[in-house]
Image 1 (tube, rainbow, N blue to C red):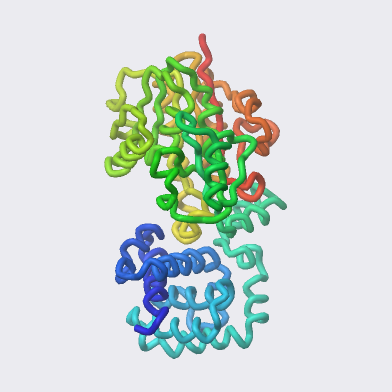
Image 2 (cartoon, one colour):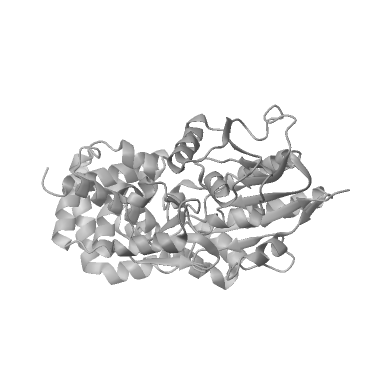
Amino acid sequence: MSEGVDSRAAAARAVAAVIGAGQTLGTALGAARGARALAPGDRAHAQALAFGALRFGHRLKHVLAQLLGRPWDQHAPELQAVLLVGLYQLEYSGTPPHAAVSTTVEAARALGQGRAAGLVNACLRRFQRERQTLLAGADGTLAGRLSHPEWFTEALVREQGEGAASLLAANNEHPPLALRANVLKTSASALADRLEAAGEAVRLVPFAPAAVVLDRPLDVRELAEFREGLCSVQDAAAQLAVPLLGVRAGMRVLDACAAPGGKTCHLLEAVPGLAELVALDVDAARAERIVENLSRLGLEARVEVGDATDPAVLAGESFDRILLDAPCSGSGVIRRHPDIKWLRRPSDLAPLAARQRLMLASLWGHLTPGGRLLYATCSVLEAECGGVIDAFLRETPEAVAVTESASLELAGLPAPKAAGAAGIALLPGIAGTDGFYYACLERRIR
């Protein structure tokens, strides 16, 4: 193949696996035929193209609706993908137009879409000629202009009102690399000094005292500080779990849904002297990630594999603190995972919320009187956040919401709290973090 075709073909294969087969982008990039044989620079280029095509693909899909003779769903996923990759290059990547067009046409042939090569060429060249008109047609709706699914956009408008647009725009930004300093070995300021001395631009986060944010995205494995166990990757919003949980030495703590272990490790770093920390996850392969992260950081915890809703799991055990980082839609981390825009459906929300309510009720039985449970999701949708907590509080007289008092210690936390709401929400575009919801519940002592 000519120069640049391999990376474009690999990107299109990954995008096709997401939109056609429902794979996550991480899985698709790892499995894309030919991707592993690419040189490091070409592999990074393929990844950037795939991320960009999915991030802005809903807007570009509106453009293609004006260019294609047949409805979008009648075209093969490989053709859809290569067209999205081609348009992304022309509109967003700064690729010289002649290179974007010629290599994308060749990539179509490499994907077995040779018969459609003429169509790909015609669509890309027509976009160059009629760009303003085509984009104006795509930008006629909020969902088109900010490149999100219609159902998701409508849900945010209902729930966030005028704030929906800024949230959607924030989802399209390139996320920074956020680190958590291992305070057993260093501090955020010392870690920042060391990174700055190596030429990195960094900033601290007032409400997350262990957080260091790098402006430049990079593979964290390049950092000696990561390899030495001085830091871990964790968004500043996720780092709020530990202070909100209010853990103290001597307590027994359960981290449910713990993989890959970020919050488990943060708990152990922040509060030495716990009586025991149990890290539970239903997925054995993902539980291995917990073990790996504990080993890298020089920490110890009891790692268990099991379903938190199974009465036989942790039978007879009780805990002073429980963290439930519940499985959710991931709608708060779209800027890191733009494939969520393509993988989630409105029909996913009710089953997810039902699972979240079941987990919450099951784990509540393991909480000691006077203990605290922290419910967390990386979602911005009410059905998975306040909707779950409000229902639980109505059904559970001994549960008391204490989120507001627990958050007082987090100086500078820009987390909006609606009147009467039980939890706090950090939304993308407000705090510069991922989207996260937290609700602190204490078990009343009778």
